[in-house]
Figure 1: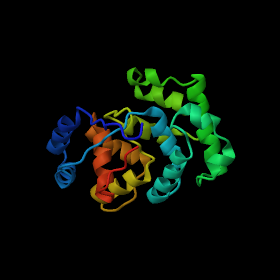
Figure 2 (figure 1 turned 90 degrees about the vertical axis):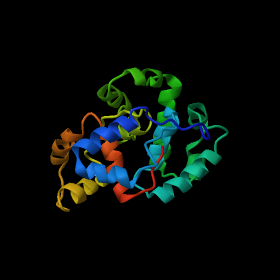
Figure 3 (figure 1 turned 180 degrees about the horizontal axis):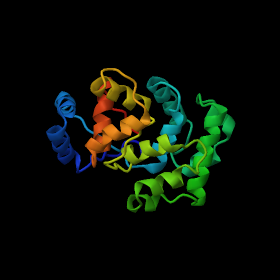
Figure 4 (figure 1 turned 30 degrees about the vertical axis):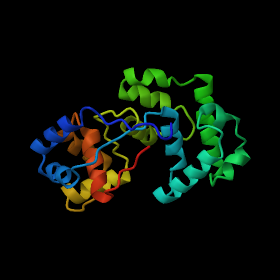
Length: 211
């Protein structure tokens, strides 16, 4: 929930060392960002709700809408969102579609049709398969959840435009990268592809996004 302690992955230092040893580009990116790392708030519903709010808008706009969204609720829980009228959600700056998505997400949590308590023990693809059943959650959003909430170490979101742009700049001299090419490049970062992704994002924006 809001204000709870952040969780830092216990594998982070090990991943840094492994990536820096095998990849000079990664070594440089890691040296450039020595005091920050991936963090999670640990609340599955909040992470997914925030990812829906932030779809297709700037980080600044998403922060503004999120603040109003949280302020409109008695508590940031699935039950509170499910009980909130769509019209009330729209006054927070949400589109009609995003309001529907948030209420559908809440409905899945309230009815127990997705099983957040099981996700830590499930493999990545099984979690993705369950998440994409929710309206408004596609593979990219599910991959962000794996990285930012479950802190999975080896996720490579090949459809992420920021990741592709950063990889293009650092590894291909600015030439465009297809998801397939990025996937091949990422083979050299396994089993720490989430960590490599995080440092490539930081090369474009040094301020970490936290969900």
